[in-house]
Length: 258
Length: 238
Image (cartoon, rainbow over all chains, first blue to last red; front, side):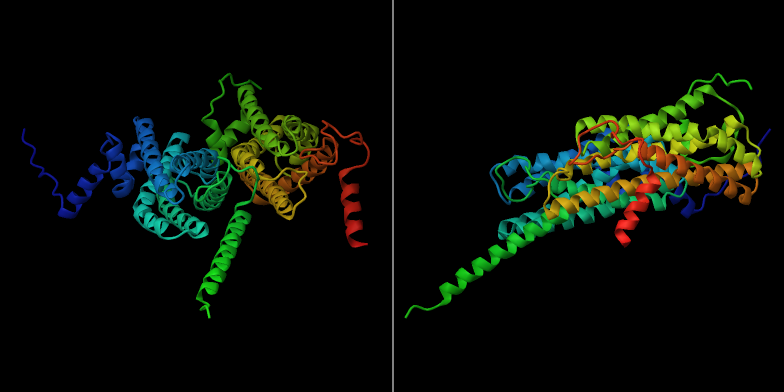
């Protein structure tokens, strides 16, 4: 018996959409594929987080994050040199990982309260994607950061520059988290806004808790506890005084001897 | 009523947090010892974790004391008002049995405790970064104030989340928003009354640098929460 029903005609746009869907479902085989997917195919990351191999993917994302953070830390440490060649990479990488771990439970709870059906593993995967994307973007800023670090002696300037790059990287990373939460259902917008503030606060405070990242100190970690805004203010104040005293010496040298 | 002999399943916690009406209504209507145990575990672990973070600022010993006392406040408030809440519900138009009203309140406290537990690592981090309680500099005072405000904000947010879910649950059980609101307000008023006095008796939770670390103050059973609030207001105004 012959089937006289003609096969369905797939329009070119549908074919492209189908091919795109298939591409977004391909497994992510290694860390290089994870790096590519985080940048170009975030939906592939999000889809794979719901599959059986999500644990492997999370591990690869963390590996990408650790690797690129260590490299960026070298650039940060190049400003002061010495101990900072190894201390800055260790602190930046460790600090970002600890920040993600501290903030993970609250994201899961806030997502659930917003009606999301994401599991804890999927949420952990989104956070791993966030730190991986942050780290990749920071490497993108590394040449700019290096040029500034070689051409200025101002700790405050370099600190603010690295903070600015981190904030831009966080913004892109949070887009990945937002897309992921939207795909897992529910309405976690309000919860994500709260979590964004919490994550940013913990991240900024972590940079102060692990100081110095830029500049030098007698101890690996600070002996005095400070709120990050207070530390920023003190650093800019110190920097301003140093600039004023340098300007004063420069003015003296401009006085022509009789 | 037959107890459901199903083992506890942690996947029920997200269902509780999402406030899915059908499962929650079924849980209220069908008594389960295991589900009760799961809810009690979440309340104890979540609030103990947050309590430990709060108390750690004063001393490690205070962390242990507060980890014990925070769940006690919640559980004693629930049990102390269990009879009253069970009576108020049908009087205000919601036909619930005593066990069902107790379970509804425990479900809302489970949500609150889960939120508190989730934010406890962040509070721990804040405490680690805040100058010691005894420090007297302006920066230290600013840090202290920020920590206290943060802790209050987390507790308020957690309480809000738990009570919003409770209101949704009551609306599902009553079928009428006005009945649910009446029962909610009545339960809240009773819980606030008893809970505030229990908090007064079981103080300190954070501690003071000028007072020793103790499980209970010697004056625990002298005075009450509302008297102390009144004295503070009187001192502030006159």
